[in-house]
Image (cartoon, rainbow, N blue to C red):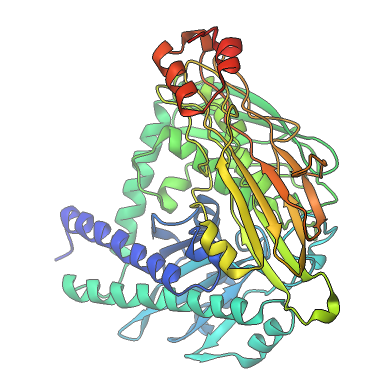
Length: 548
């Protein structure tokens, strides 16, 4: 007698707990602060065909939605004839993984009673993978670091020593990078243990029936949700900073019943710098935006992702071809939801937020001794920072909050612990939220200085400096970002630059756009913003016509 729908639903809920513990294991064992502190990771369970059944809530949509495609590549390339109990697979191929070399994806086949029944997979961002380091200056992917093709990290339980030696010889942080790879493998192992215990409890020996139920139930629910979107064609464009030239983003949403297509035809071509985005990552964030607005209650899995069809012309900046540089593909990828939601707003008014800072203001710092003869060690520091989100229908935007990436802010203490820097300032940036009936979220002001004996190079990978987040429905734009020294010296928003000992780097993170006409904002809310230091009295008068 087969399991009932109720049995399947109970097991489905348990799977969410299984993959959440999988992700928690990675956070607890990871070497990199980007994983431990920010949660820049993903974890999930897949069936034997490589279809995602469940994903951990902890993690980023860029990782998890791209990983939903990635595991099928592992299954196809390794093949069942070469898949053994105790194997662990690995890659960081940007086009077969999650978009750039710094993301390591590890896949572990699941066996039960000698039969292969599925996979656990996880992804995390490592601080260094060699090459130029985490930054946009490369002109080919070959310059950006070590590319690990889909291969075996371990076979039948034995880690491949040559692979480890190759990695250690090509990265600046060998212990940290290799340690994170072991953490990823451990994460999958923890998921396997919990899954086996669950299957013992429910008396099942394979995942096929449960996988079919989860995926088909989710697919039907998603198709039903899409069918409620008014049929039609909806268009949006958006200009963002790019590296050496502005980037034009363009999307057309075509909705016909329960069919939805997002086509990025018309988007700018590839850059010669590393702001290009492989299409797998574009699909990940376009799907995320659409699903958030159209089917937010449906759990995320292959069934709920497949109904959203995403296409981009090969060779545009959102569908970069090998061997294009793609190191900071997150900058373009994180901006994709803004243009997609802008188009969807025309079909579903009063549903989606205004544009936000969106792209993380990640900063990779390479600390080097001011005196090369001093013997002070080199250090690599990665810091994640977030601007403000766009105001939402009915709510102000969120300040210093990562959307759409969903990562957490890294604590100053944890960042200073791993490198010779001092963060002198990290506070909300007054006046950076776009004015509106609902105010945009605020950005941050951050000041960083190298400690005694050190200078540092930093890789800038920032956007919304020349093209701030636009408001919606009459709301005003959010504050533009700025990159400078504390003395006011302007710096570039992209590329490797030097901060000498005694200088301070100041980052002014952008704010989110406002929603609705500013004159419609509640007077008490304006007074509260002034009292809290979110806006100045002058801004209250200028933007809202308010004099307290």
